[in-house]
Image (cartoon, rainbow, N blue to C red; front, side, top):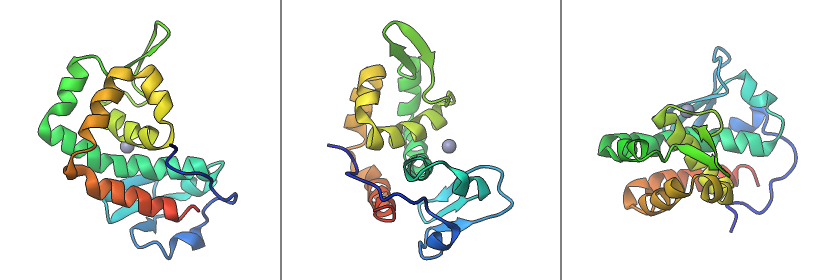
Length: 158
Ligand SMILES: [Zn+2]
């Protein structure tokens, strides 16, 4: 099952995020978005220049993924995954370091959270060992606030 069934077409605009309490706009930011906490995510100018809503949703879920990756860092499980080589994708024998260009472990796991929700089949196919372990790990109640926030974000897009 996909995390979402459809997204309406227009991208989120600056005036749309005024009513979303955990999002704020910072014109000085050079990146699309930055995570401070589950209740504080900032977006910059380039967030509104993303090509479509799915791209915007992906960026916000990546930021929420930082909550998840921080926990895996604290628990040390991220280093187990790294040591086992789970952060290297296997594209039919072609090895690719990282995920969507994210090679730092904390960034890999944040990105993986977004991909896990949006394109789980991609993760299952090319990062299978990681996918299996992550699927188990994310069931832990430690992550439930991140899942709840991800669902809250999705609501803003439908
Ligand atoms: Zn990140």
